Image (cartoon, rainbow, N blue to C red; front, side):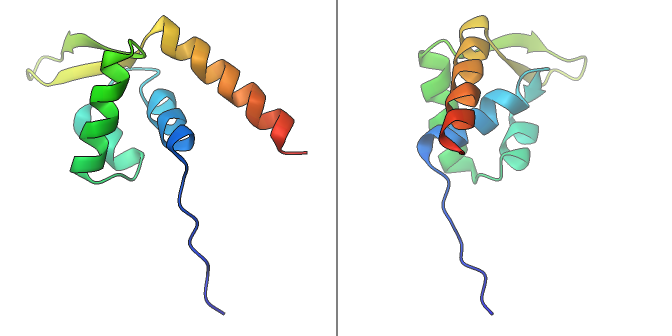
Length: 89
């Protein structure tokens, strides 16, 4: 039997990125853990930065820029998780 592949929705990808960035992470970690290629990931990251859902929090000792889910992003993630609970009856 062949396993059917289901694409994630735009909202699901956003939730994945926001969730992964809760504790702070660099671009590479976010991209790999969210299972996105660089082009798709960069589009999402720019969208989230413009919307104020993720913020740049500086860099680690090696000079790598770190991103973290903002307060607004945490609020959105909470709402989306709650909506997901309601929809998965």
